[in-house]
Image 1 (cartoon, each protein chain N blue to C red):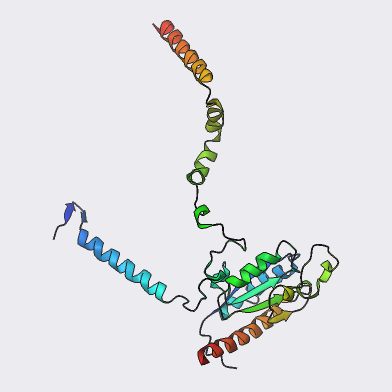
Image 2 (cartoon, rainbow over the protein chains, first blue to last red; image 1 turned 90 degrees about the horizontal axis):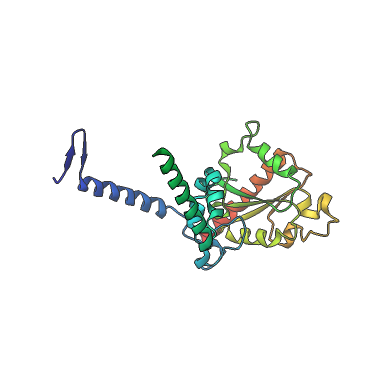
Length: 112
Length: 145
């Protein structure tokens, strides 16, 4: 058997495939016990959105921005000023660049 | 009546179509330990696509009418509609409102009515039992087909 040993642990692809097949069989069993007599092409096959009309398929995606909502919310104090600083105007970036280079030069001059 | 054709727990989806929440509180009371309808397999579910019974409270406001219709259409067959509260039948305290398009049976077909403002949990449980019997008959008809 092509098993990799890691002391107390091991990795065997055949075991992994067997576990995968068992999971697939379980999922198939659950699915086969589902309601079969629903009417195709009616609202019974539509997704449920608390009674709202489901949007077209091409609009049913979650934007990556939504996934990072909690992260952005937690670091709001950092992101709010930095996002504002990114104006997209090259003059602003040059001012930042000049200011930081000047500050660095002054610090280096003082420290020696 | 023996319940043989419908060999499952009874799952209900509750939709509030503009109720004052009085009926909704009584529905919750039916789930509390004093009545505990879950011991009979009567369970509220989160999606109409899992439900056998659509439990409707409220007089149906203009905004809720298309949503009620859509939710009704999403309940798989055989299905039964249980309407709880007086306002869903004749408007109740909201009967003069400019914003009503109800009663419920003008939007979707209703099978069982439970009157009261709000009805007591015992009345709601009796309504659920009647809905269950209707569902049993519908299931028998499907088997006969």
